[in-house]
Length: 390
Image (tube, rainbow, N blue to C red; front, top):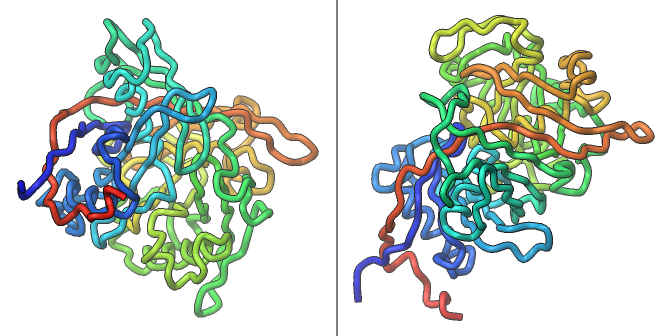
């Protein structure tokens, strides 16, 4: 018997993330065995992931498993997995808007969806969030186009613009845009430290904090933020209490261990000028809000795609701290410009107030994607259980 098995896969960059993509029928195993396989392929647990395909950051330690959809009105379904760098965990609870960008191109290039020029609409069902996303992918000669003139901050060069429209994105966890039923909550930590937060579920569940309550300007870059270990610890403590409060975990003390990726957490502040990671000065007038997000207990180097969807929706939800800071322009246009460490990310929201509640039709972001390689990843036999044939 061979010491290892080859499993077909492809590596894509989607937005500002990179991940390993699989066809569903190439991983016909129970979820626990799939997790073992993915941990091995990515090279976890190891912060460097030197023995795998991961890139040693949360943004490059991700996977997508894609196959034909069983849901009427959708073409393909996707299952996202966030692979931990530090422990033997694959978190299946959340999603990744950036990696979702490449699901449409992958589906077209694998023949799961028939290409229609000049733009092919791919209806995607997210198994993780039970929501639908429409990807509009430029195509030529039956293949997804990679090259184009669209630029996204955080990625060198330009690419073909792919629009991702999240349809009815609110309430993936418990059916409510505001999982606690309130646009604001107060979380109290040890030492009677109190923080006002807004917990919002749209595209992803995000706990939004005020930068000033954390003792921050709001414009800190990731390296500066991560040097503030006390702030990072505070943010994780807030996230953990929020996870317990909305029922993701039974106790806040176990949130980091069993649900490190959900909910996300971040902080926001009013528009202000600041230098981006590449030294460019971002002007105050170029943005509507400044945002910073964390993922897997590290500072995101740009901005999450699904996190941007949530931020845009939260900006229209009456009473949230995001809505208070976003200002009237967002309510008039439905377009929010988020200032993040690499530049500006736009999110467009279609929504209306009905009896005081925000009803969200859809929210859209634009990204680019690129197929980097395809082939076989080799996995040791001990990653497979005899249960695989059951």
